[in-house]
Image 1 (cartoon, helix red, strand yellow):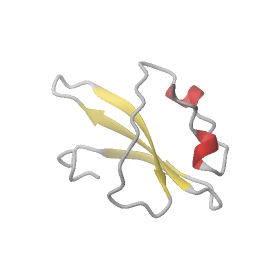
Image 2 (cartoon, one colour):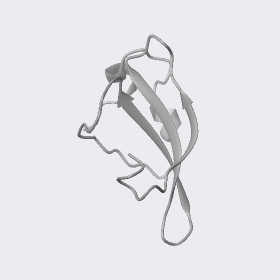
Image 3 (cartoon, rainbow, N blue to C red):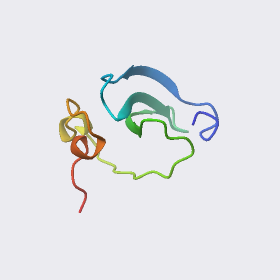
Image 4 (cartoon, helix red, strand yellow):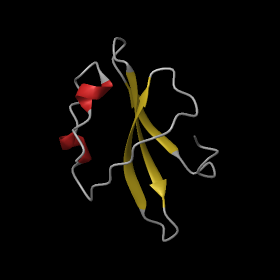
Length: 80
């Protein structure tokens, strides 16, 4: 994934329960103006080169997710 964004990702933390079917990554992605966007990435276990769903919010991304869930579908809120 770092190659896709020009190697600009800085891994801040990678935490995931052993039983979870996804990996949680927290990264700060630098923009051209120097601002770093705090980003949560939830990747299905074993996925490589998979398509993504992008949901943007200006703040409170952690509050929208249920990160204690073991199943990715239960951790991500429904998008309408």
